[in-house]
Every structure is written in C-alpha cells, then in structure tokens.
Figure 1 (cartoon, rainbow, N blue to C red):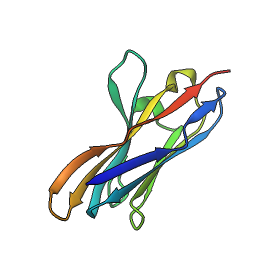
Figure 2: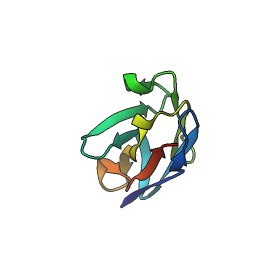
Figure 3: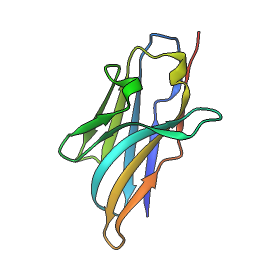
Length: 120
C-alpha cells in the first residue's frame, strides 16, 4: 500500500506565501508523475500543477507565475511554493501521484488533503 501525506496548509493573508509538501511512502518501486489539485467549497477538484520525474511541469493558467512545483525523486516528495496568494486560492489542496508498486503495477494515489485559507 502507498500513502501520500500532505503538510503545510494554513491561514495566510492575501499577497502572502505558503509552501505545501507531500511525501509518498509505502511499497514503492518508483514514482512517476506527481502533482497538486485543489477543491474549493462547492466546486470540482481541479489541477493546480504537475511535475514528471524528469522535471517537466504543467500549471493551471490561474496559478502560472505565482506557484512553483518541485520534487525530490530520491525522497519521493513533491512541494508546491505558492506566492502572491489570492482569496480565490482558498481550497483543500490534494497531493496526487502515479506510483509503481512492487506487486501492484502503476496506480494513482491521492492524499487526504490540506486546507489553505487566504483571508485578511
């Protein structure tokens, strides 16, 4: 089994910064694509940013230039640096990863989420 555990959420004022981290653990052979999604109250879960093993990134238009995704392949971690935060960034942020398990092939996993609230 594989677990994704997020950390770093909280309350921040508009214009502020926050850094989210996610660690994958368990029966892992290798981790392929990792990324972040978010879900605001009453809305669907949307892509924020993804990053491949090779470092290729993809961002939602709404966060380009403000958010930066990075990863440590050796530690199976992914981070999301969020700058110039806006109230509309308020959401539960979920870590997501495509993981090759030793006995399970390639599967997609979700973390439980961490709440980010942007408010004055």
